[in-house]
Length: 234
Image 1 (cartoon, rainbow, N blue to C red):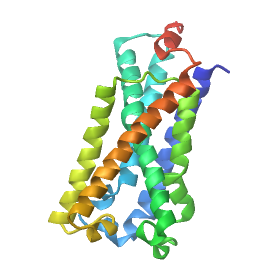
Image 2: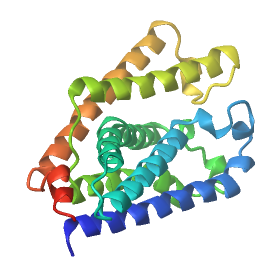
Image 3: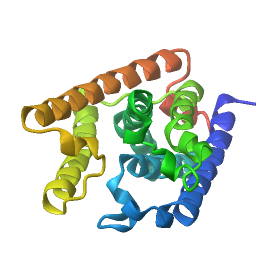
Image 4: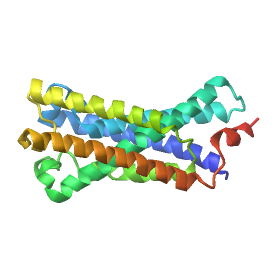
């Protein structure tokens, strides 16, 4: 079985997996948590943003695979190929690393800050692992199975900046305007400490971008370029 066929199967399985995880979360968890029913719903949480990014990314992968393996090297196929690689390198992989590492980092310090015992009956641990742990391994497996063309640093960092800044502004609006603090510990940070936290998180996210870039280059160094690989399909 060729690496491209294996990657295509993986993309469809991953897409179905994330759709199931999010559907279960929406039907069995979301409406049962009081904080989720307030303004903004579950879109207040970066974890949910990350899950939606995964669904979008693997949907693009599936469409790309269907177009390019059909034997038709159309302009739209190359467009989807470029979108797939840009989104993976600039947004999906770095945000996944941020969610996974920050969630379990805060959990290790004090689980009540991020996953209180009182919600465990509603939000089971297996689902928490699906949305915060396995996501990292899925992104690493994606890097291992398929080479992605790394975008320019300017383009990649700009995409990540737009996503990170959008979430920050949304979180500040919820906190200062709607008095809804997504993560309660942020309400305890005042003045310079809040600024330091934001800058430290931004720096950490930038570091994760370079870490994701390095993983992508290392895992993909012995794999054919996507354009060359698909060009052999007629």
